[in-house]
Image (cartoon, rainbow, N blue to C red):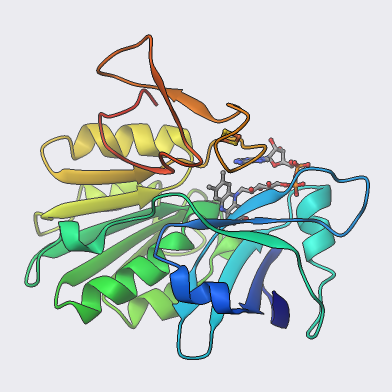
Length: 249
Ligand SMILES: Cc1cc2nc3c(=O)[nH]c(=O)nc-3n(C[C@H](O)[C@H](O)[C@H](O)COP(=O)(O)OP(=O)(O)OC[C@H]3O[C@@H](n4cnc5c(N)ncnc54)[C@H](O)[C@@H]3O)c2cc1C
Ligand code: FES
């Protein structure tokens, strides 16, 4: 794909816009495997698709620089080419929420990005969305305004420097409505609590398991099935989105 633009939008968080006709096949909650340009970084890095613009054949990714691979991506500039495998994974299903129903979208840290395109598609089909986004601190917050244009958007920070002080559950425990569906992506500990709190709802969790191949060949990303502990799913091609209770988290 060709790099259209790249900019820093929060502490170590970049917004990268890419162009290519594979955008036409993308759905919310799917991810891409990006190949770092440094030759010694052999593994591709999985990054979620944040926004999809099929008319322009462009997609937006948001990623945080955590190590060598993401630091390599941060050097991309407009006009560069990047080697990608995409789209991968099953993604979120907006149609699990009916028009007129209310969906609660809960994101933690770098798990927030895939909820944006999901929110856009839910609103387009006539559903109501409320976002609850959790970050460590004000400097880490991103896309609060963009999500707020789609529905109510509540932010929680651990240190209380923005929004509610606490965790996403500090906000969700105080909500004045009962959601019909819940979609969530973020750290495992957060997903575990979300799946417990909303066990009686249609709840979908996107797992950001460590991955290697990203295409179902290496078994680096297996997660245990709850219905039969001797069996597992591969998060990269049977996920990364699962129904709450479907896998052990
Ligand atoms: C399906 C999927 C979607 C993802 N979407 C995004 C996204 O939209 N934006 C984003 O910033 N990141 C996302 N990640 C995490 C991202 O893939 C890792 O941060 C990245 O691979 C780290 O590569 P690196 O070379 O920079 O760091 P490395 O040197 O490989 O690791 C640096 C640090 O990141 C941690 N790390 C590495 N991989 C993961 C992972 N999969 N999950 C959590 N921590 C990890 C390591 O433990 C280490 O502490 C996603 C991961 C998956 C599996
Ligand atoms: S990452 Fe290789 S099978 Fe999932």
